[in-house]
Image: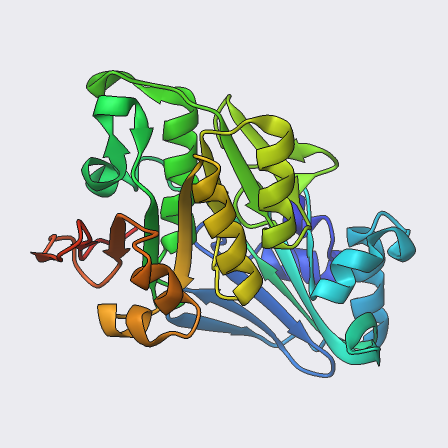
Length: 301
């Protein structure tokens, strides 16, 4: 948390230090509004009013005093900072040819505090691992937002890359397409999260482009992508499977019906692209098993 506090002006930093920040997940600043801290569903209001000058000062520090250098990340709506933390940005989006080319008149900054949860994937390992071939089954982890699927995915990457001694699983080459910087959280070429010793990362690149690049250049056994959902993603996954590369992905949804009726995920379902579909729900018990080798589970980060 200390590395986050350095971005704030002294007065705000001193106020924040008066609170217990160990479990804080978000620090949200809005122009002409008080600061809000969030811990799970609990919200803490701090009566310090942020203005435009403060927002710009913080943004300059985040960008190492070179906003232009971070222009691509800003256009994606966030910047990844040291420690793997992400700072969401809103304001006046400037559009050209259907693409965001800049965000001006910054209105808010949302610091999302990165916290890696080790061993949180243990419960689903038995469904993911193909021990006979020292590989994995093509797997997709499905849940609504906020249930921890990215956290579980990150831990799976770490374990698969390092190897799992207790089940005699040897580490394998993993290729991660980290389009939004949430898995590895790369900062100046260095992953801020522990993603294992046999993991190669392409960040800030569209998933479909990154998958093909990694397959062609890095010879991965497994390709990893977070929150798939476009037609290009579907085509890239099909390309990976045809190339003999396993896929480990996540997607939004709550049930097998959501998968089947999703225009993109449904295509992958119909061709049996994924051998395992895991659902993250409240609780931890694996509740049922689906045909076509699909496992419907209830697990929690």
